[in-house]
Length: 486
Image (tube, rainbow, N blue to C red; front, side):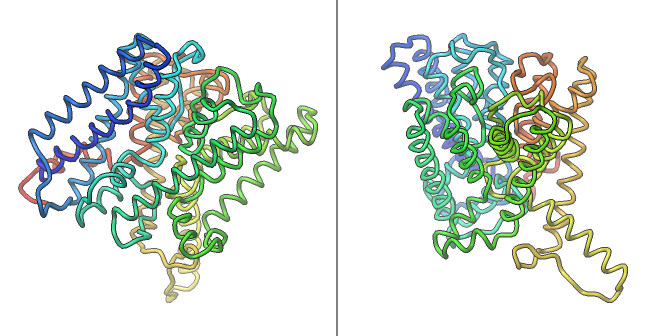
């Protein structure tokens, strides 16, 4: 592995992190939030210092290309470094202790949206803006945005994109890596802007609309008020939020292709059609359950069911009502939606619909081959044949997610949390949802978790955002051997 290249690009990432802190710093200065301004100024200085040290050790040269190990190292270490630097405004401003600052930063950049802050309304607006920015930057991906706005990485840049992209498919939509990243970024900005305008038209003030737009399209779910979305008393806003959460759950690569080839690409996408079907069926079941079990009026039940189905299915985690009080059948469906997540290549977390489709088709193929031993067939998705190694990777990832869910639950049970709450928190954390049921329910926060569980929550949020294997590769001793490049 070429550590010079890794160090140089990590230096660019820390510079990018410092640049992202400028808007909150400017807001703090304008509103005379002196503690906040000082905290952001210190944070920017630390980012610059880290950039100087990393660039002094390494840097890119003319014909440098990023290999597999460099791509994994830049992505994994980059996320870790940015998340650590991202805690400084919370801690330096005196808003949170060191551990809570760490979990807030990891939760923001990973798009989990779990918070340890019981009263966000006492925070200055600069900190609220920083929380939303971490959701937004982490949603599409720190490295993807970084690649879109900085110079060409060379042919090896594809390994960085692969290390961060969520889901089992990694196809490019444009010949050049940077053009591909730039296209995804422009769509991301356009959807965020459109979402902010829509929220403003629904009655939110500019600051709230922009913050909610960033955390909606980034599927992070951080808010600027303590109360639920229902407290806005705006049914139009709930429908609008549900619509944009649904959009954010779709593949941004699919949207990029649709711009070039027409909207029909979206409907022909098997994964997105399946995802929409799942959301609408789950919404119908939950709505009926609310009407029968809780005597909710049909229109309120439909609106609430659709909102929470999209919120949990997209792993955004916005709350319109206390769904922790919903009947058991509704809770079962919402738990399945959390575990499933959105589409591959979206900002949503979870297992991803594409993997479920591939696994079901793979099982069906195995059954057919048992009945017809001479059958030669291949798993397909959206009419395209899928390589066998991609299908196997989906199965491996499913196994890894289950193991990690159980592992985190075991850690929390060791830390004194009961079985049901441990499973709920583990599932919502690994799925990047944030709120779940019980201890970390719709109206609760992660502040109730013991310190050991908070620390491990950071680890598992990091694992889930980079889809486990990128982080596990960093833990392999053979990964750091420099005698041979991969």
